[in-house]
Amino acid sequence: MVFPWQRRNVPPELAERVPPGQVLTEKFPVLQFGRVPDYGDLSGWDFRVWGEVVEPFSLKWAEFRSLPLTEKTLDIHCVTRWSKLDTRWEGVAFSHIAEVARPKPDARFVIFHSEGGYTANVPLATAMRPNALLAWNYDGEPLSAEHGYPLRAVVPGPYFWKSAKWLRGVEFTAEDHPGFWERNGYHNEADPWKEERYSRS
Image 1 (cartoon, rainbow, N blue to C red):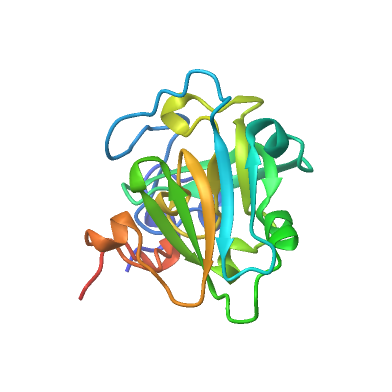
Image 2: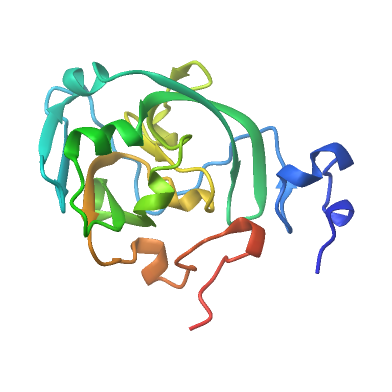
């Protein structure tokens, strides 16, 4: 067991915000599998919402950017053991996407679909937390290509790999469908406070 005061480089006043085994960073490390997409202009970009919903829909980039803006300041925690506090994001609240799509009663999970067939899965209840959003800006600027331009999920709570980059769609499902990293040995729930980094199965 790691006690709060034993966490490396974490001041005592921040201990309650930093999960066990994490190190604080001022940088924003870049991690991904595969190449970084090169979009050029976004005239061909679209975003789909489908699955167990009453109102599936699709939006072009200009339409997506016209959705109601929300701004959130969040702590994020990476499975590779870094944490970054007070990160600032702008985008649309995930709850607004759900409000438009109207999930059916049996919808219990969300699958984020990204470029190249990459997926990440979370319970619908996790995606519906008040601070969850689909973000196009970080720290007052458009996302960089390495951090998910033009759009990424930002889901507070689980390790940051669940916040899929280069997002192209959201699927609502009745059954859970493990995403890319979960199929490759990472823990399905990914709770940083329980250090759920890797699957034990």
